[in-house]
Image (cartoon, rainbow, N blue to C red; front, side, top):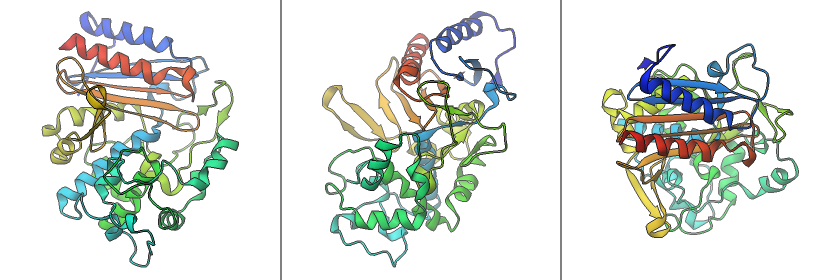
Length: 351
């Protein structure tokens, strides 16, 4: 992939100017907007806070729920290897000693978890009181794998698997131990060997790096820093950290699956699985949200942790991908709607 020249002209200069204006609208200590157009990259930074010793564009940002796109790509990769099937029952990839008293739990498949149709709640009920009382304290950190699986055994699904779409961090988190067991490695290890390494994502991890390597998140006030997010056993649903350049590489792999060692899985995760909300609703692939756009659909996902927000999306018809990051949590930041609209407009200009 080619980087944009330091002193671009023509369309490159116009795009850089556009990104600079848009980044200035985002009210956060640190902001990064990064675009790839058929392999040519443009990255701009901004922010209301002082820049750290490491440039903003070189920091690793917490991706929150965008992590799910990495986890489900891993699911598709292991399925392509024949280590599991996407329609395998979850229980077949959990310890045989785990007792599941609720009949509906036995019918949940790996595909149900990936597509948020498992019937499981967004988060375990026991996390709700703490989330309300301590909104910047990660209750996820207190869950190890054993507790996560015991909680799954205790919770009665809200409905039979496959009947209804309910966004579920809890459901996707269960893919972590299931995929790890199928591959015979820990979840971080198998994600690294099957997804991160083949895609050359050397700036992507599931945990904090050395001092100065990671962006620092802030509360809604934009001044109070929050600790790095510890997702515990919920890593599959929200623990990935990535640099902007790595995120562009991830998007470019989806834009050009044929040029990737994971070509089959990359195509698989973009295949529509369900539609909800009637004619004006939205389509879901195995892992991405899909909306209509000029020239063809655009696919995207957003994420947030306790002090950061992120967005990534791409438009296959135009070869455009966009990643956005901000070190602030909350709607006043405006990162996600701004990034979504920017991607839509850029797609329209190229179509």
